[in-house]
Amino acid sequence: MTPIEDIFDEILEQIRPTKEEIDLIDKIVQKLSSLIRQKAEELNIDYRDIEPQGSTGIKQTQLRDDFDIDLFIGLDYTAFEKQYDNLDTRNLKKKIKEKFLWYCNNWIIESLAPSEFKNPTLLYAEHPYVQVKYKKKDITIQVDIVLYFDLEREYIRENGPITAVDRSPWHGKFVQKELSTAQKDDVRLLKQFFKACHSYGDKSALGRVGFIGYSAELLIYHFGDLIRVFENFNALEMTPLDYYGRTKEELNEIDHFHNDFLIIIDPIDKFRNVASAISQKAYRYCNSQVLKFLKNPSKKFFRIEEIPLFKPADTPRLTERLFIVESKDIKSDIHYTETRDKLYSLGDFLVTHGEKEYTHEKRFGKIFFEVFFKVPKREYNIALYCQNPQINPTYERRGPPSKAEKHVRKFKMKNPNYFEKNGYLWTETKRDYHRFDKFLSDTIQKRIPENLDIVNISNSKYAKTKSGRKTLYILKNMVLPFCSEY
Image (tube, rainbow, N blue to C red; front, side, top):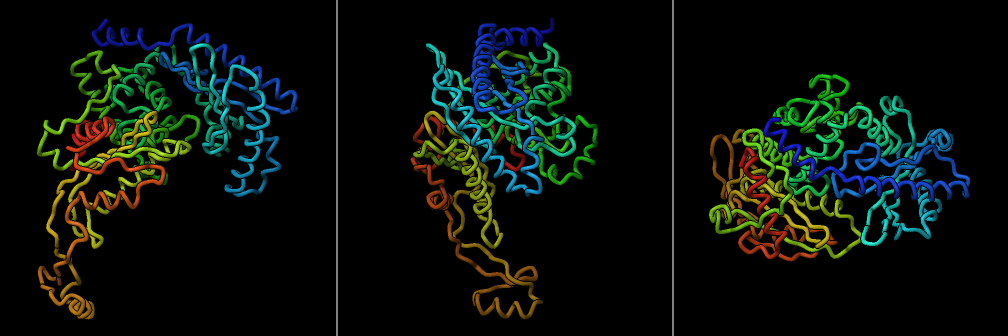
């Protein structure tokens, strides 16, 4: 065995699910499926299938202590097709939502009482689904019960799905069929690696979304094993992975792939990029860790550790350019992904309006930011780097070309202190803001999401919370080193 294989084997011993875990999940699935089937018979509801999906379902690529269960109930779309004929997309979604809502309330939730399945909750993604907790002694397991249309693979390939989750059972079948037991272990190792990089899922510390389980499964499928994934990782941004064999040029002709940084095409749907949401920040940091691992293999790259706290004294010059916004969620009914997305939009606004004046002249220079949140503590933070936190109170605003007589006359009337330079008229203009901290504070107070209460807006030296200091560490150590313009 090579040293890398020894590391992989040792980590696998720690992250493979135990037989007891697998047996418990099977038991829960059987019990829950039985309750749902019984209620369906009472209500005379037709369905095609009830089956566990995701990593703990038919894929079997879960990590140890990963107990979450996704139970999918397949419906026959042809039974509803006549009702949905000639509906536009908006009204089709509305009708499906109404039907799924009725099923959730009258079939799924009603089938769970009384039982070990506690506190069934109606939640919404594209369509409603039910979330329930399995509670027995000291064990609590979250189960999502999801309705979908059981469509043929060829139908999805040519037409796309009816609902977003219609692909999921086919994802499960693909992984179940195409990946060997050894490759599923490699998927586990790759997931563990991404988690150790804090770059996994919708709670990724780097970027809005990190790598997801299905992307890890497809990387192993395309390259064969983990070591080859690592060896090819550095070229991923230049190398689309397409199950259908299309070239990069052919994929670039598809409009909705134009802005995608990474491309990993879904084998089930040739017009879907599984990697479209994976952030550049997550990829670049993971890539740096992959390169370090290949150079000096170690188990530490698979160890999930707490993110360290930012220490202002370590980099005093940089500290003056780092700022923190710390806030607390005061409305528990807002899903964390909604708040996360609003903070990323707010960060984008700060970059756009902080880097340039409304007249497009330079303002505070380059600005970079990162969002980090801790759901249990309901803490949400934005850390920012500003190239020039304090600038001249005025700037030279360019006017029309000196030869444009009509526009020149108007410009001179409005700006009597004009001057000419390089073939244009210019004027000295007072800035709305010449201190970044003031611009940041005013913008945040006007635009922060309503469910967030501001705890602190300050230079990085004065961060108040541990999660705020972690956000600053992420920006300083895991984002900025990989920004080409930094």
